[in-house]
Each structure stands twice: as C-alpha cells, then as structure tokens.
Image 1 (tube, one colour):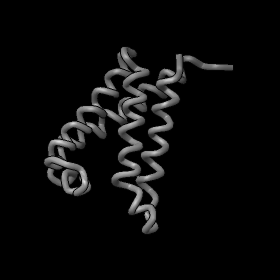
Image 2 (cartoon, one colour):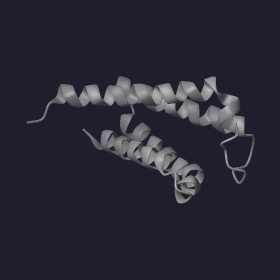
Image 3 (cartoon, rainbow, N blue to C red):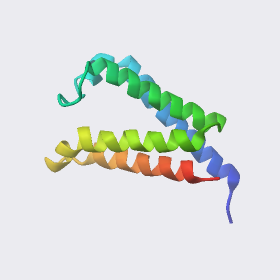
Image 4 (tube, rainbow, N blue to C red):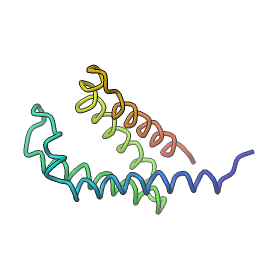
Length: 116
C-alpha cells in the first residue's frame, strides 16, 4: 500500500539535504573552489556559486512542488557531472565514497522527478 505522506516527507527531507549542500557551497567557497578540475574553464569560485545555487533552486522546486520534474532531472545531470568530473579518479584510486553518494543522490532525484 502506497503512503503519499511518507513519500512526500521523504521528498522534503531529500530537498532539505540538497539545500543544505547548496548552503555549504556558499559557506566554504574557498575550500570547494579547489575541487573544481583544471579542465573546467573559468574561475573555480564561479562554478561553486553556480552549483550551490543549483542545489538550492532544486531544493526549493521540490519543496514548493513547482517545476519539480525539470529541477530534479537537472539536479541529476549536475550530480552525474560531479561523479565523472570530480569523483571518478578518487574512486579509481580506491576511495569510491563520494562517487557512490552522488550517484545515489542523482538516482533519487530521477525518482522524485518522475513521480506524478
């Protein structure tokens, strides 16, 4: 038996976590800008602002239930870019934690986005 309340609560908790990660991007801009790979053009801080804003925007879209599908699919794309651009090499070096986390979060975003 489906529980719409439990599903909605899970979506909101997911959104709050994404929003928190977005806020952390703004709070720790200097530390995070060093994680931006060299092959990505532009200033690392700009990319941290963009990704932090994207995380917060996706969280708000999920919470207010407006443009949720688009926001979730874009969030999943962003997280998968993180997987391949940032987390793949550490995973190949024996530290798969962040790769697995961001892959799982991307899949959760897809599930939320595809829910009617």
